[in-house]
Amino acid sequence: RKEVYEIAMERGLFYKARILLQEADMTEEEKELFLEEFTKKEKKSLLAFCVLGGVFSEGIDLVGEQLIGAVIVGTGIPKVCQERELLKKHYEEKGYDGFDYAYRYPAMNKVLQSAGRVIRTAEDKGVILLLDDRFLQMKYQSLFPREWDTFDKVTVNTTKACFERFWENGK
Image (tube, rainbow, N blue to C red; front, top):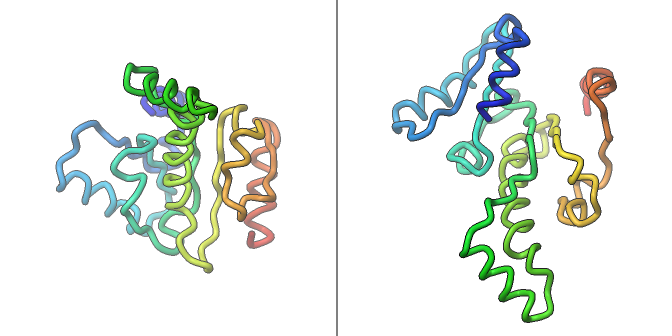
C-alpha cells in the first residue's frame, strides 16, 4: 500500500486526484472522516490507498458512484508462519492441496471482500483491476465469482483504452 502510494505521489497523481492513505491504527473518528471523503462531490476524483483485508475491505457501504473502482495489488497471500505451515501440513496429510487451504483461499477471500465493495447492488457499475500475473492462473481464476466469467486482460499500454470503452458502453 505505502509503496504504491509513494509511486503515485512521485508521478504527480495528487494534481489530478484527492489522495487518501489508510494509516495503521486509525481511531474510529479517523475511520469515519476517511469514509466521509467518499461522499463529497468535488471536481477532483478521490484515490484511496487501503490495506487488503483491512478495516475498509468489508462492512462498509459506499453506494452509487461513491466507489466506482478498486485496484488490488497482489494476491494477498499471507506470510509464511508456523500456524499456516501446520495448517498446510494438516491438509496435505488428508490428501488435499495444503497451500490452497493455508494460503490461497484466505488470500482470495481478502481479494473478493475488497472487490465486493465496488459492486453492491444490481445498479452499481465499476471497475476491478487485479494487478498480479498470478490472477491469470487457473488456480486463482477458479475462485473468481461466476459474475467475473468475462474479463479483459490489460497491460500498462491498454488499460486506459479499456477503461474508456467500459465507461462509454455503460458497463
